[in-house]
Image (tube, rainbow, N blue to C red; front, side, top):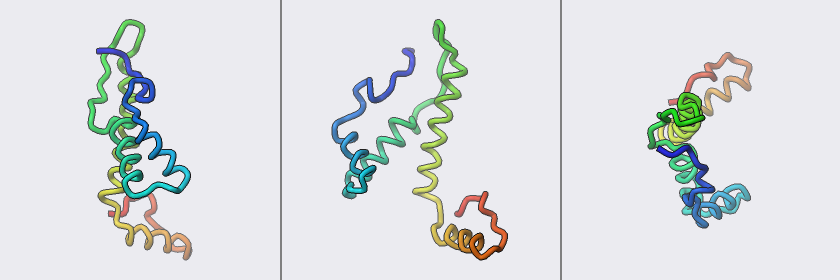
Length: 111
């Protein structure tokens, strides 16, 4: 197995994905660009659907690389969780309770 290489350097970053991410950052992305940007971030940059195990290689700690891959994947899993599972009305209610001075379980997910 080869050591990890950035998707920007290994050919997985397409012109369309880069343009889509830049359009999102500028607030100018159309629906298709928004979907492409999120897909590239979750699937490629975060490696959501790949194993995070990294074997030891000469001079490279597999444990360290595995931990790094787990961290990236966790970000992607949280993005997918927000997209698929967060109940916006419950989240709004939690934020209203906080602004009204009532205690809130803001550390719990809104599902």
